[in-house]
Image 1 (spheres, helix red, strand yellow):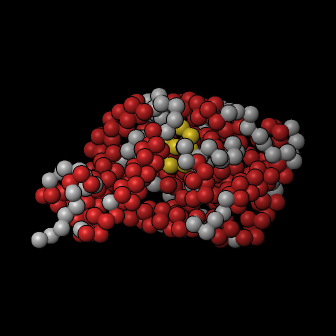
Image 2 (cartoon, rainbow, N blue to C red; image 1 turned 60 degrees about the horizontal axis):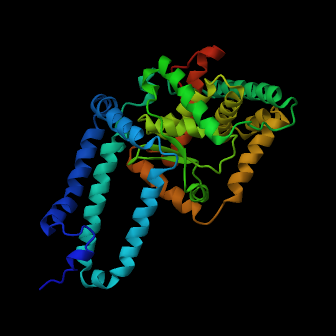
Length: 377
């Protein structure tokens, strides 16, 4: 006769065994359903990203946005703590019926998997932002070079204007709360030009687990279950505005990291505040320089050599910040996140962040009077 652990210690309490079996066995069907929907980005765009999702996200942002702290962080911490306590208290019963324990874990994962894709995850399969905005996502080396040099000139001019000299790093004179509010205000203006970026019921907060995020190497994240945009409170203010813009981009249903990198750049660059425009210029330039370095390290050195000492000092601040938190587990977290992105149709994984360069080049084409090359790479 099979051993079963007592009803009062089962993960799902008194839930009937047959129902738990059905939920666990739904996982393969969920995988197949998601693959089927992922093959129809136009359908996802119309019925989910522009249909159901805005209502779901708006509801949860309205529900939790007014709370001054992260409800999602507390939810994660509470569930994780409760699960470990449960494991310790019921380790004997688990050993007696390990198959039942695995079944309950599968059922729990099935519920989380379904909820994740219902509340946000289907956005991974929508029409790409560049296609939606009519942007050309190819460029030549010369176009990349022109864009980088343009951003370098802009960063130099703004840095000197804000610091009063060319050697002092820019220090943003705002609190994190003020930066978040300025980001929200900028989205209101951007939404008038691009309706897809309209931001109602704001829910943009510092994360309660910012120290953990820093050790993992993350600047922020979107909680898909509470629709809260979380920003790493330990970030230097030099990078904070663009990360705020990036995470709100996720809130609005744009999942691809290169797209939200561009949205974060766009909303910060369009902000009338010169401090925001400086952080945007330096942010975009950083990605362009990284791509140039992959192609021609000498040209990267030449462009860096044209930067004011104050701009380089701001970059050095960011580098020192991340180096101070380097640890053996960071590559593990990055590898897990890389696999997560690959599973969700971002084939370049973490490297997809760098694909923002094509959007940056196209965005500045008209300003630089660059003629797109139809035979770009």
